[in-house]
Image (tube, rainbow, N blue to C red; front, side):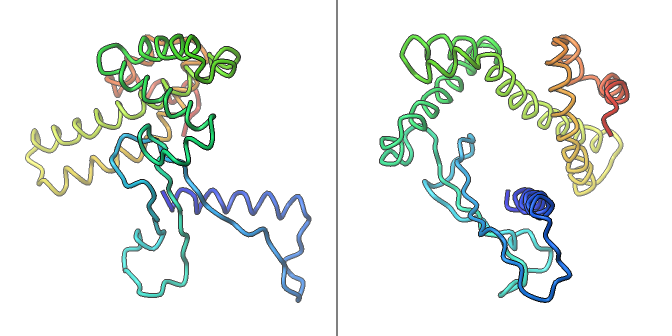
Length: 224
């Protein structure tokens, strides 16, 4: 997570510098906006109510006083966590409740049906009602992309492990292959968005299983 935001901050500062027409060759110190990286976490992995993550934790060679650092403050917004904060902000409370509903129904229904049921029920109960009425399609798309990407990552990892067993690869090499496949997740996320926009749900389902078909779609949508 810190590395992701490290790259994101780089893009933000580049945009800011361009907009401000900053001259980096001037001799006096150029003042830049002070960053504060806070993440509202609603993932399924169990974490504490608040945790600190550091970019330096990902360094290949750990350093006691790293020359480059980024500290990310993570606040757990899952239902039942940080209740004092959630109770002070109705929007965050309702968002947390909506996500909890979706996950509950996703255990017994298809993801698409779970999202539909969760949206309908939330509107009836006044949970993010106005937002869900206006942005229903966007919410559906966002959640389906998240679940589809999570599914295909697990599928690719299993595929890599199976390949390792079939060809007699060592466990370490199989894990390395799984990691390499997993790193293609951003490509699949972009592909998922294109297919949902084009209402190609059947092709999306096929792409999660058929790697040859998935490669064809990457070429079709010019996803590198």
